[in-house]
Image (tube, rainbow, N blue to C red; front, top):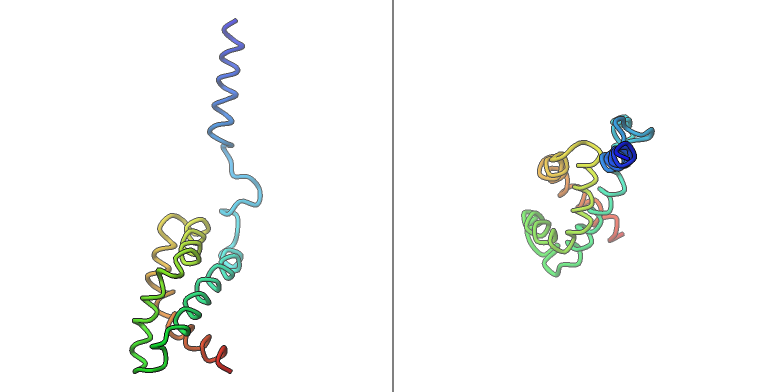
Length: 124
């Protein structure tokens, strides 16, 4: 009688802990180029949300170009869902913490230029 419950417990533990190897097509098997391609829609969605929010602000275009940074910062709470999706996507493709590092570094570095280009294109 003991072997059946023991076998059941081993089966349940094996299922609960998952496979010992990564399944084919897993994120860890993607190249950096494939990961970046998969991230493009998430980055675009976050950027477009921020650009739409900035361009819809009545203060947009009425001050010095330096107010763009303030408008971008103020738009983040409105766009928290796509920004969070982008950060989470980066974490899943590149490892825990990579999303926040990307957002706080390279993404914010180019965001003012991207917003400017998007708003110019939308105005034409």
